[in-house]
Image (cartoon, rainbow, N blue to C red; front, top):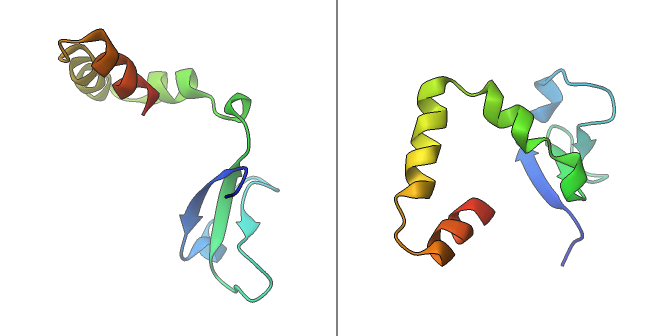
Length: 79
């Protein structure tokens, strides 16, 4: 098991991103690139949520709050 979460891009070589964000998948990989998240501090969830449109924010709010049990709401937020 790895110590990171990887977001894979099959044609990542075609993406222009900030330097150091996209990593090569391995020595034999030519076009696939990935973004590795190694800690929770690297993920700016609040910034990503506020960047969503008001309609998307409302959809997420309805999804989280529609659960009747607190444990279900907590698990949905954790996902």
